[in-house]
Length: 99
Image (cartoon, rainbow, N blue to C red; front, side, top):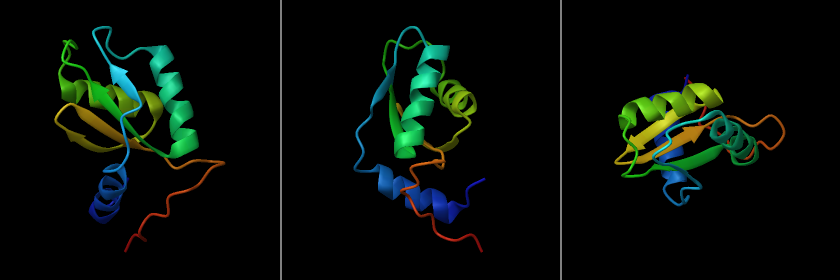
């Protein structure tokens, strides 16, 4: 689990990141989760847009994305989801220390 301080730090890091995935009418599927997991391994922090034509509740979509990729839900703002997962091989982001 991330602390509030770590989530704030990640939100500020994500501010400059563009969404690289979109959840559309089809909703969240297995292939998408695999791609997002691979992107998380490379980048650690990803943004995902939930398109207007998606019929699911945006909170449910964010939960499915986080659970399916075993990542931390950093933020859901508007229709944009920010996920973080510490990389095994490409560690880039140094989180503030937990106290």
